[in-house]
Image (cartoon, rainbow, N blue to C red; front, side, top):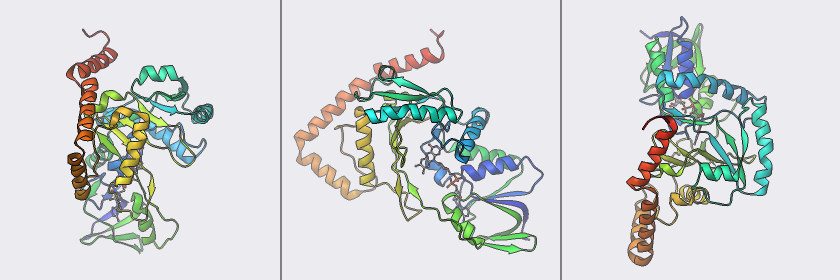
Length: 366
Ligand SMILES: Cc1cc2nc3c(=O)[nH]c(=O)nc-3n(C[C@H](O)[C@H](O)[C@H](O)COP(=O)(O)OP(=O)(O)OC[C@H]3O[C@@H](n4cnc5c(N)ncnc54)[C@H](O)[C@@H]3O)c2cc1C
């Protein structure tokens, strides 16, 4: 027999799973439908994983209100659900006078958004906190509340709590058709179907397609791809905060951020594309990121290696040929990489960093 629900939530990303968790508190028969084999496999698996305060949202906007509310809710929820997170603080770095002049307005905006601890930071203080940033910055804006979190765990934790509290999760269920019935809707995938009184559209990038299944043509989602470079854990001692550029009207720009797993992230790009499935990396995208990364934190790569996009056999062959045909340049690169390792990643250096962390979190520990 075709099952019947009160509510069907389409899409088990961060949004759909959070809705399912919240609605699980009520006496309702709820199903969470996901096209992928698991929850959180859409955009939610691939964010930059920043826990935003909402300091830079447009004051008074719905986004500003929701970000403040979500920040406050995530604060107790993450420890309760065991979601790895860390409130590192973010620094927006001003590299020229124009960016420096923009900081007071950004601080004012943050204060209007209720993020009252945002302060302008001197170049000396930034240098003290982030000794590896390229010299030349003029100052910055410190946002102590910004943090990092585990982007995979958020939908997973919400879905787990929802399912424990009675929500039915159906994975590998790609909604193909929605038909209106007398008392609600009939939803069908390739193999299954179900009845529901209400539908919540949480299909992310594909929410416009779900919307069209109701016969509406209200909006179109244009995908924006963000490529990221994930650095090895050896690079972690180079960065202590989330490092952001001063945003422009068009983009928030490329950031450098530690991850909760102890890596460093560099990115994202921001590319408007027609294809929602185009999640691959590109040479241009990675090179652009490396250029930006080098400008902020020269030690991240700078002349230590030849970069090849994953899976690009032709590029790998070309890099190997260059390495063999230019032995002197290759030797210089290797020497530079070795010097960098000795400078930053020896056991003694990592040990000193670790001691400093322990001193900060447990000052009394001998
Ligand atoms: C590069 C990048 C960096 C970002 N960085 C941050 C950040 O640092 N901090 C932050 O807070 N946010 C960040 N975001 C934004 C954040 O990732 C998204 O807002 C969030 O993940 C969206 O969640 P969602 O549930 O709406 O969408 P999704 O995670 O895409 O979930 C939608 C789900 O619907 C499913 N679905 C679609 N169609 C169907 C169908 N027909 N039938 C069944 N299921 C279907 C999909 O499979 C998917 O699992 C970033 C986004 C990008 C792209």
